[in-house]
Amino acid sequence: MRKLSFEGFLKRYVVELSGVQTTNVHKLADCLCENPRMKEPLFLYALTFDKVNLLLRYTMNSNVAAEYNQLSNRYSSVKMLSLLENLSPELPEGYLKVWRSYCSVRDATLADNDTKELIHRRVLELQKEKHLTNYRLYTDLQLNPGNVNAWLKCNDSNKMSLNCAR
Image 1 (spheres, rainbow, N blue to C red):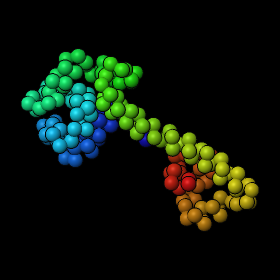
Image 2: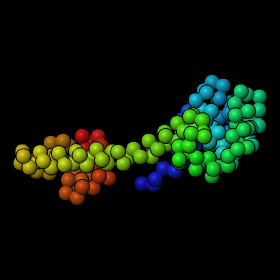
Image 3: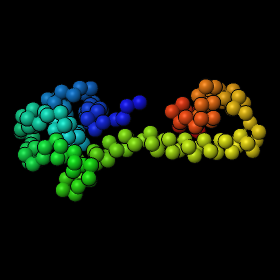
Image 4: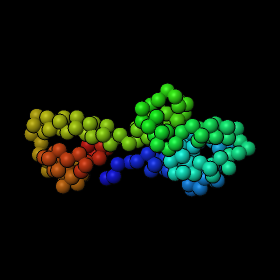
């Protein structure tokens, strides 16, 4: 599975927040009036995909135009990414929230793998204690035998979802 990039996250995030199922900057900018939560992700999206001029044109008469203009003059895409990665206090809190949201989504599989590791150890302890075979586990729980065996014998966490491990 490919690692989630900030660009990919922003693309999905603005579409999800807007509810318009498009990455068209004009349509996304129109959603700003109804959805003020889009202000920061939309600017980061436009900056990342080199669409700031379009965004400035479509938000010219709105209350976010001044902030967008100031940020676009001050930061390049590379500089903004660097400040976000370092959680710089120089940036407004809303932009840091977008970065933290990205980090939580990006690192969710790592947290799941840690949880699956704890569950794996406990299942092995219970198997020993109760004298349960892998066969008994996957037949009684109606799980995929290959995945259960790969998880229990080789500790391959990719073969078992967190839900199935629980």
